[in-house]
Amino acid sequence: MRLVIVGGGGFRVPLVYRAVSQGKYAGLIDSVVLHDIEPSRLEAIAAVLEAMPFTGPPVTLSTELEAALPGADVVFAATRVGGAAGRVLDEKVALGLGLLGQETTGAGGISYALRSLPFMLELAEAMRRLCPKAWLINFTNPAGMVTQALQGVLGQKVIGICDSPIGLVRRAARAAGVPLATGSLSGVDYVGLNHLGWLRGLEYDGVDRLPGLLSRPGALASFEEGRLFKADFLHALGAIPNEYLFYYYRRGQAFAAIQGSPQTRGESIAEAQRLSYPELRGPEAFQRWEAARREREEGYLAEARSPKDGVQEQRDEADLAGGGYEEVALAAMAALLTGERSELILNVPNGGTIAALPADAVIEVPSGIDASGASPLPLKSQPEPHQLGLMAQLKAVETAVVRAVLNGERDQAELAFALHPLVGDEKLASRVLISYEETFPELRKLWAEPAGTRYAS
Image (cartoon, rainbow, N blue to C red; front, side, top):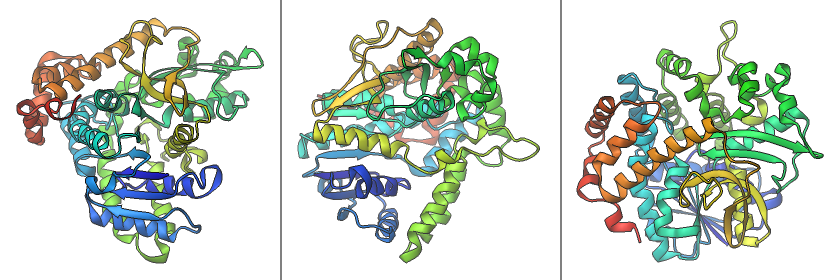
């Protein structure tokens, strides 16, 4: 079996390679192809893989998509169109207009999607031509929006993943004393969209243990999501939000923290990449990469962790050790290739799972996955009104962005900014779109040459 990683020069690629080289997924993949448009990044990551203290599948490097895809059984997509510099601009434009600057949430997330979707549609069309039987496992952000757009080309052969939901489930289950069965989510009640979801139940021995956890402030304070919000707020909410809801429930604090930081998250990553990639050479490449990876993980969602006594609160050790998105990706891949059914929280078409959302809307919920693909498991209950309200509003934003890219409808892009609850103003939305067009001139090309004329089926 051949695995192709598009975005193969990405910093977290060694986590995937480690997972296919040792442990329960060893032997599932016979060869790995790393594709990236930047040869220097490919060579640096290849040096890290070569320096790893174990033997894994043979690796081929490619800067040409047409050469990388033939023979693929599974394609992992983890791209960042425009690189770290693009992310910095996504953040800075938003902040300059008094809005949250974040990679996947709010104005910056919409800009990122407008830039990412054309390439991802190109990838999907290339897969349809060159490896039509291959599965695309997508973790290019915004993952739910990208997955929804690619359905028009690949149908059920595209599945979106994110490690945030299962990370929340594991941490909350540990705090509640609930053991999780491998490959099963039978007691887990989670519902939402990508980067907008809630853990609503943790059943064990026929009893939902989440209410007990929500009534224990000390237990909530033992893990990140439980510390993000006041215990009485979580108790009243009756659920534990995904960490990205910090930007909605604590908007003022998030904006102040980002604005008051000497660097945006994008600037921090760009600086770290500038310094670390040239060092990834020779026999010490793996150790240098591991040190840089842990430092990078420590800065994740730093604005959500308030300094205490002048010292920045640190992330949990379990979150720094790896085993996040690559574990979800490999579990999905194993189910698709072996047919051995598993249950994961995935980005999949709604069908009739959430009654108030369209059938083709991509949602992020517990799903069953095997050789035939992935589909949502039945919900324990429909979303609460406040959950559904946010989901419906964000789904309208995502749908508008996809239409803007596929059909070249600039007014849909402007509508997406206006509808987003972290923008929420028609005149401001117009200014935001113009600012991003001035920053990224390639956006104007979308209105003249819609991606849908080239790639949608």
